[in-house]
Amino acid sequence: MDFEIQSEITAIEVIAVGRGIRELERLQRRYGEGRWRKLKGVATVRLLDGSIHLAEIHWYEAHGIGRKEFKLKLPLLD
Image (cartoon, rainbow, N blue to C red; front, side, top):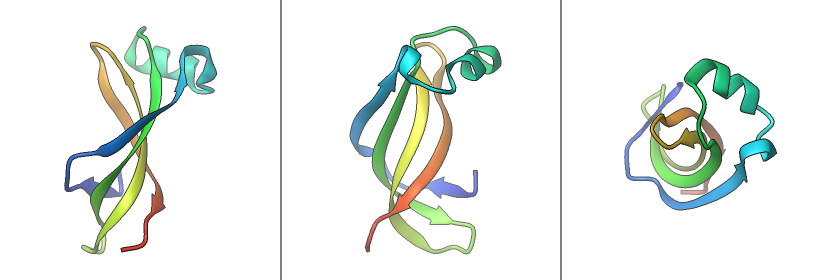
């Protein structure tokens, strides 16, 4: 991960569930079977250069497995 989440993730929305996730087979092979969901939310992040920004973050999660593979998708205007 090339950023660090500095605040709680808010405005969480589900993007896709189960077979609607393109990466489902890879997630199941790597982390295990579960009810996988792809989500997005907003949080404050610190980039590698030390700057802090409000950004949209995407990730996958499954019950009993947790949140995996955070991606910084869209820096929001500060």
